[in-house]
Image (tube, rainbow, N blue to C red; front, side, top):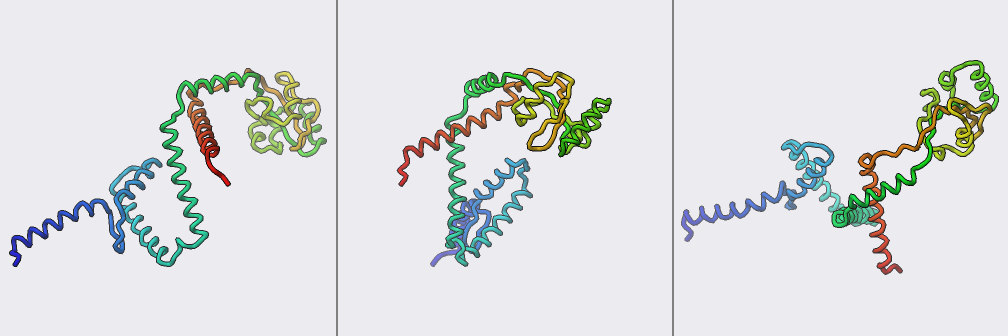
Amino acid sequence: MMNLKTARLLVLLAASAAIPVLAQNVAVVNGKPVPSSRVDAMVKQMVQQGQQDTPEMRAMIKDELINREILTQEADRQGYANRPELKNQIELARQSIVIRALAQEYLTKNPVKDEDMKAEYDKFKGQSKGKEYHARHILVEKEDEAKAIITKLKGGAKFEDLAKASKDPGSGAQGGDLGWAPQDAFVKPFSDAMIALKKGEYTAAPVQTQFGYHIIKLEDTRDAQVPGFEEVKGQIAESMQQRKLQEFQQDLKKKAKIQ
């Protein structure tokens, strides 16, 4: 017959054996564990979004995961996961997650090198030669309206004041200012009229485009401005990463047996 000392020892052993199991889970819902690793995963996501890892946040996440588990168990009991339309959504979600992980690991193993980004920047810089134009415009619906504005300009009215009546509210509120841009940023009739002007001139006749009738004033021209490498390094890296992933995908597609 077991003595009291032996019984106490067995209870202590059983309790100590359960400690690692409890440490691995934040809760057990209807016999199904909610692992601590799931909390850690959600904490990591929220920290990446700029939130602080605090005991309060972890308690909130724990409660959320318990609620999710309760609802998921009920959904499973009612057979939602076996519905064809939900099966497709679940599979698409699974694919998105594993594809994202595959892509991240591929880029980690095949990073974009600084020298390659610099070469890409130099290529972009070489293609960015040319001029930029600082123009203003006033856009109206009818040709007669445009002619009347030109008459007012000839009479000494300020372009910026007349621009308040422009159909283009964005530039109109800025005195018709369109900022600096290359000529190919504009539709061809507008561009052709703009580059024919000298600094300070405005079009002597209305310029028609699909948007209406324009009066265009050329404020100034300059050589195309190219941002520094450090300013666009992040954009170049992202573009080259996307290119690497596309090449990786195309290579896999060529090897795949598609029927």
